[in-house]
Amino acid sequence: MAATVTRPPAAVRHRAPEELVPGAVLAAVALGVLGVLALWWRDTAFVSGAAGWLSGAGRISGLLAGYAAPVLLLLMARIPLLEREVGADRLARWHAFGGRYLVGLVTVHVLTIVWGYALTDGRGVVGEGVDIVLHYPDMLKATAGTLLLFATGALSARIARRRLGYDAWYYLHLATYLAVALAFGHQLTTGADLGDGPARPAWYALYLGTLAVLGWYRLALPYLRDRRHRLRVAEVRPEGPGVVSVFLVGEQVERLRAEPGQFFRLEFKAPGLRWTANPYSLSAPVRPPFLRFTVKDLGEHSAAVAKLEPGTPVRAEGPYGAFTGRRQRRRKVLLLAAGVGITPLRALFETLPGQVTLVQRARRSEDLLFQDELAAIAARRGAAVHPVVGTRAEVGDLGAVLRRLVPDLARHEVFLCGPEEFSADAVRALHAAGVRRIHHEAFGF
Image (cartoon, rainbow, N blue to C red; front, top):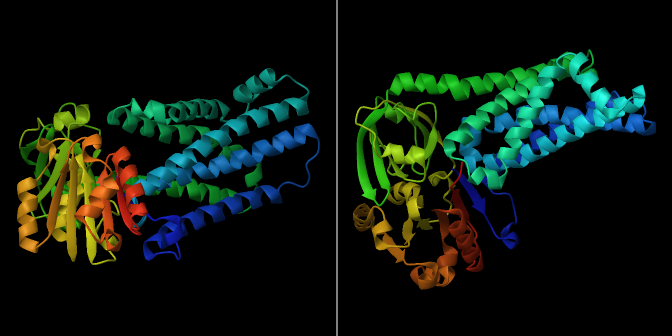
């Protein structure tokens, strides 16, 4: 979960400050692609015949895939700068988009290399493929890694993904690390295009650097923070149907520098919950020594959280996310939430400066969360809270409802959080109402 900024096309006149880092990241990735193409061009004197064209296509697709794999891992390495300035939501979309291209590049690489070599050697495609796998250095490992990569790619498809629990999704991505290590190791040992010049050391630096970054941010840093803060469950408090707040207590929690609107990946060291870290947003500003997270029963993991006992140790990765007050540019702010999407907005409602209005959408009145807390905050800071309850048919056009509740809606900056369908409808309604700045907190893995 993390933040993106959505604007209507007509409103895009210049690059806003929060888009500078995402633009720089994409530019750096593009420069790397150009470098890979230049490497292939340098080592390709000429191409002739079907065998030459096929082998050439196999080489360039293999190089691009070998470059894309560590880049995709770096996008999900939990690098604080990227998590804070780009946002986990956008990083996840880039990762998913690039992953589809990676699978496509690997497929092209395998087919064209085998076919091209078969034409060169005057052999059948199947026989050539078997010979490559059995007799070329590191190709048995590369074959196993490629099959594993294809399997993770198939399971990552949207339809298959919706049928997976978060735990399965988590372990699937651990398998991706193994797939990359197996599938692309042969490039370092036998890659002809890397030659004896600076390209091979640069390739080693890319892969070893990626390994170091992953090791630090995904393993070492969470371990060190775990030792420093010693987080544990203090209380699990019911908030509504299938919703609980989990209060954690720890040492020096202020050093986490967590901001309202951010989230952590929490691993509860209890039976059935170990070794999986799910993302949960802060539902209140940090008040040392306490952190509060609010969790809805959306699967086996979140359902088990409601049964945690006080004193259960917790390992927390984070804070992550760009859905914070750092994005605020206008004095008038609308916080628009649906369901458990109120979680990060509850924390922002208490802390954002200026004139703040909160609209909370729910199907039933009993699904409205934090009503007493929100009323107290609204009274204290002179803000407005508007519950919108009912089915879509009963509520009617969301845009009309928002214009009625917030008459000068177009002058507001909006922080939006809720289920995917609701968020899509809200973005369309806000754009139609002339809202130019929408910060969107998306739910997902």
